[in-house]
Every structure is written in structure tokens, then in C-alpha cells.
Length: 160
Image (cartoon, rainbow, N blue to C red; front, side, top):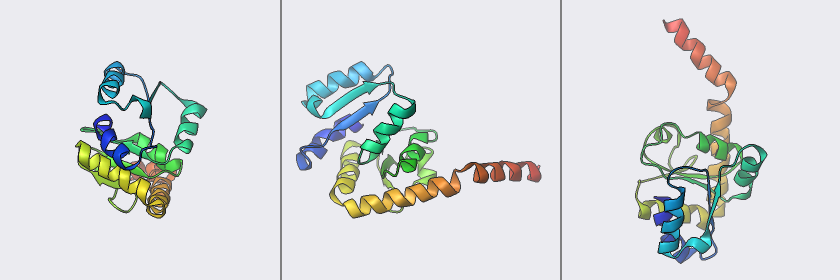
């Protein structure tokens, strides 16, 4: 989904670059598709990254896009927020429950034009991007910290 949104983003932001971190059975096909779409100059397929290297990738980017058709939770969103980055996520799956559109991120449809719109919106308006990132950071700190999670877990046991 993200790869197919890139040409539309590049029409408005010629110098944009897209970093894909992770390995999987789709990596080679995505690299080939980037070549076929004529966007390989803007795509960087880094393979598996973890630890400090992954943290540095989050810190270096302008935004994190999570365009999924069926994301069960979306831990990468929490990682992005922890790094102070705005997120663009699809309305599908778990992220729909905690990404609030125009508050702590942008929620888009799981199709290329909508994803491209979300990415361009964040790139276009730095003030909005910073505001979304700050609200995301606050969401991660308040709703997904261990104190909150342990309190919720304890509440489940008290209701049994």
C-alpha cells in the first residue's frame, strides 16, 4: 500500500525518501515493484533493524506511516510516538482504537490516494506535524505506560 502511494507523494515532494525497515517474504517483490514504478531512487530497503539502530531510524524520520489492511495492534505506532514522530495509519485493526484522527495522528483509508494524502498533509504542515507528534507522545506516556497497563490488568482480576 505504501509503495503504491509513493508516486503521488513524490509529485508534490520531489525530495521525499521512504525507508522500509524489516525483512520478510515481501521484501524482494517490493524492491522489484519500486523499480517498476520508477521510484527506487526514493526507496531504501534496509532489512531487519533493532535496538539503537532502529531507535535512530525513528529519530531521523519526519513521520511514520503504518498503512496496513489488518494490523492487530501497531506497536510501531507507540515506537514512533515515543520518538516524537507523527503517524499516518490506516483505519484498520488495532490502531483505529487509539489513533485519533487529527488529534494524535492521521487515520487514512487503506488505499494509495488516501495514504498519499495523509503523508503529504504531515509533510506540508510542520506545525500540525509537531502537534500530532506531541499528542501522540502524551498518548503513549499516559495510556501505554506500565503503570496504566498494570492498573488495567489488575482491574480485570478484580472484576472476576
